[in-house]
Image (cartoon, rainbow, N blue to C red):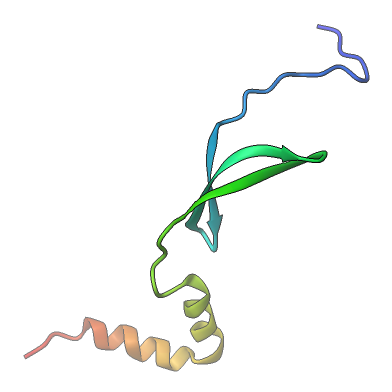
Amino acid sequence: MEMEVGDVIPVKMPDACTVYIEDLPTFRGKMGQANDNLAIKITEQLKRPEVMKSDIKLLEDNAPDLLEDLSVGAQEPKD
């Protein structure tokens, strides 16, 4: 197949997609186009867990001892 400048290759795009923020599914949307840009129209906001990845990262960076204490405390057997 010979391709030339200006040739158009049709691509089948999915009707719906999931938008991830911090590796968590956050929105569902429809693929589309706005002006000359690809776009996603948000159709649904998904429920996210209360503790976010950024919260854990914040603890790792600023209070690693506290994070370690929390994980050790969670593993200790109860009497």
